[in-house]
Image (cartoon, rainbow, N blue to C red):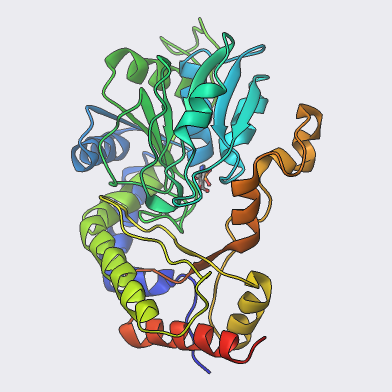
Length: 359
Ligand SMILES: Cc1ncc(COP(=O)(O)O)c(C=O)c1O
């Protein structure tokens, strides 16, 4: 049996072990666990790496989105337009601020928001639009004269910040992953950066004086130290993922698979946080691959507009059909940088075998 996990973080950490442990020891010895020099250095290095003026480390990608919405003043009675096909955080943060998420369909070719549908969904109550650069591929930014919050949780380094604020996640499975939860807001806007920093520490400025209500959205110094080590390797890891995507495309082009099986085409800057195919009989294929020792994942089985918690928003099945089809067909294959050509060949061989057996 082949063993191809969906992700192998141990393989990534092994060569960096000493460096990572030294970085952690540095924080332990400093006794500075909340903000401070390690966080400042990480923010400077991150801003330089992604080419923004400001990078503000926060506690998670979810909190990056939440604090970005707060920085734009989103609240009760406001609407926020976003894709119905993303990780739950993209929509959850909107409802947590008592605003109304307005869901639009995706472009079936890219899994990303249909920009025209997003613009059409704008009303006088719309405060912002959140396009998600899903799986690491840049989404179009809907042009409606509104500030945009980019959900870049899966797309670090895919392109420059184009919206007012862009939100990164360092969840361990992301291209740049921490040893726990962490995230960042990146922006070129001085006033918004200052607002995010204020909101990150309960809106206190000076300390214990609160003119606005924020939260505890701080990134840990320990996570910052780990991320500083890993950030230096991000370009090589991204190149590895892009090489693996090309290899899959070549392997699939030469393989006998049903014509309805779609492999993602390349796009400028695509960083392949996930390599997501569309597969007929997806769930049976996934079970077959699992039996063969190949890890896969379904991102995402239920679009937002059909989630039980959003029932009161009044969406119906069939209303956003491209996302509903993607929820039935999408399957993420292993794409992590350390994946070998032999492992990728084994993945494609098992997929071919599944369809050849007429399963
Ligand atoms: C598209 C998207 N948005 C938001 C998030 C939330 O990030 P986090 O898990 O760091 O809170 C994630 C990742 O989990 C994500 O994939």
